Amino acid sequence: MSMGKQKIATNPVLDKLRSGEPAVGAWLSLASPVAAEAMAHIGWDWLTVDTEHSPVGFETMVNCFRAAQLGGAVPMARVPWNDIVWIQRTLDAGALGLVVPMVNTREDAQHVVDNMKYAVRGQRSFGGSRVASYIDGDYRFWADENIAVMVMIETVEAVENAEAILSVEGVDGCFIGPNDLALSMGLTFKDMGGEAHEAAMARVLQACRNTGKAAGKHCYNGAEVTQRIQQGFQYLALSSDAGLLLKGARENSPLSTAAAHPHPPRRARREVCTRRFQSFRTSKNFNDPRRHTKHHEEEKRGTRISGLAGQQSEKLSACSFCLRVSSCAFVDHYFSGFSLLIHEGTRSTTKEKRSTRISGFAGQQSGKAICLFFSGFVFLRVAPWIKSSLSDLHQEWTRRRAQACALFPVFVEVVGR
Image 1: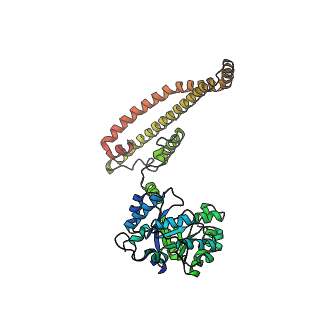
Image 2: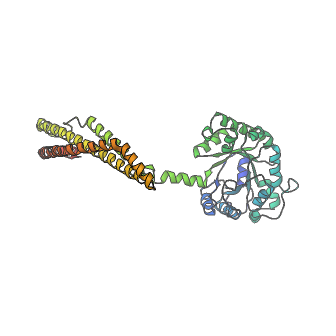
Image 3: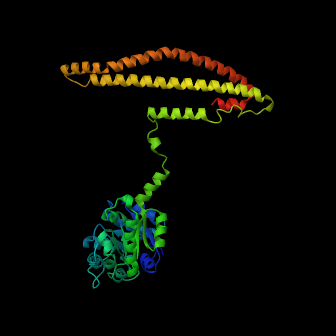
C-alpha cells in the first residue's frame, strides 16, 4: 500500500511486526525533507526522524514526515526523551510511531504508553492531528490501535528489566541501542559485537520472545540486517541518510591520502628510488641478456651486444644514482645548516643578547661548518671525474645501442626504458 496516494487503513509497520515479518527502515538525521523524500523512494518500510541526535527543528521534522509519507514509507520519529510534551506534540505532527529512548524500568515503559494512548487507556490529550485527514476512520480510535510504540533498551539496567518492560500492555516492541549499551557495560566501541555485548542483546531478544513483542536493533550494513533477521530480530534500522551519504562519498570519491599529499618527503623518495634500483639489479630479466633474442642465427652476436649493453647500463645507472644521492645529501646539509644559522642569528632582539647568542652559536657550529666545507670540497673535486666518466659511458652506450638497434629492435625498446 502506498502511504501517500490513498487513505491509511492500518499501519504497515505494525502489520508486519504482528505477523512476525521484518520491517527494515533507516534514520533521518540530515534535517532535510529533500533527503527524506529521496530516501522514501528507496522502498524502506519506515523512516524515523531522529530528533534526539540531530539538529532537526520541529517544522523540519513535520516536512520530513510529509516527504516520507509521500514516498510510501511510514513516518516515525525518535523523540529526545521520555517526555510528555515531546511525545504528544510529535504524534500530533503526524508521526505514525515513536521510538522513545532510555526506557530502563517498567514504570518508564508505562509512562510512554500513557502519553501515546487516549483516555481511558492513557492520558494523551486530543486536539487534532495533522495526519488525521489521511486516516481511514476516526483518528482517535485508529491511533490507539495503529501507532507503533517502540521503547529503547540501551543500558545494563534496561537489559535486566527487559521482560518487565516488554510485558507492559501497549508496548509493541523494543529497539536496542548498541552504542549506549556498550558504554553502559563499560565497553569501548571496539568491543561492540564481542561476547559480552552479544550476550546482552541475546538476553533482550529472548525477553521479546517470552512476551511476544518485536525485537529491534540498529545495524551498520546490509549483511548485519540479514544476520539479525535470521536471529529473530524484526524492527531493524540500516544506518541513516547521513551515514549512507558518507559511505557513498568515501567509496566513490577520487580523493585519497596520496592525493592530499602528492609530494612525499625527500627521504621517502630516496628510499623508493633505492628499492627500485636494487630490485632492477636483482631481477631475472636484467641478468638474462638473451630474453629478447628473436633470430636464432644471430643468437651469439646478440648475446654479446646485449650483455655488454647491460653492463654499461648498470654502471651508468649506478653512477647516476650515486651522484644524485651525494648531491642531495650535500645540498640538504648545506641548506639545513645555513637556515639554522639564520634562525639562531635573528632570535634575539636586544644588541647584547644578540651578540652573545651569535658568538655562542658560532662556536657550537664551528665543527659543523668544517664538516660542511670538507664535504663540499670533496664533492667539487669528485664531480668533474664523475661527469667525465658518465660522458665516456654515454658515448659507449650510444655506439653499442646503435649496433643493437639494427639486429634486435625489441632489445632497444625494453633496455632503453
